Image (cartoon, rainbow, N blue to C red; front, side, top):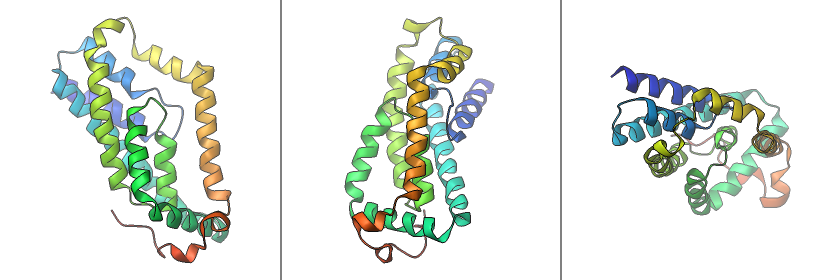
Length: 197
């Protein structure tokens, strides 16, 4: 039971980080190697902790959106309206995104800022993580010498990883700064308040 709690706590904490956290798959691999947790328990615990962490991260950014300027709120409302007109594509894209190794923290931050419904994204993320964590956990023996400290160092020192995180953060800033109404229509088409989950 203690191993499950430790796995949950580590994965949950990593997924609350808005940037520069180690990849969760590395934690799954490490626990797959060093613990006696069955594959199903490892994957379900990891996926649930990751999804809950991302869900709360998005809610944190939703609260932060209350403290931005009126111009930024209008930009975010227009982005939300544009997304909601094409939401079926967004959910499909997130499903593919959730299976890829691309960082998802900034996507959830953007969802929270824009006031888009968080739960459907979290559900797609959870489903994708069930698949990807199953693959990583079942191949844990192949990368047996990989440790959590290696994962943290790779996340902090990999030029590609750092560049990708910086690019995603720039995209998050652009979300709030771009006048989306100019491209997708006026913000009046967006609901007055963020969607409820």
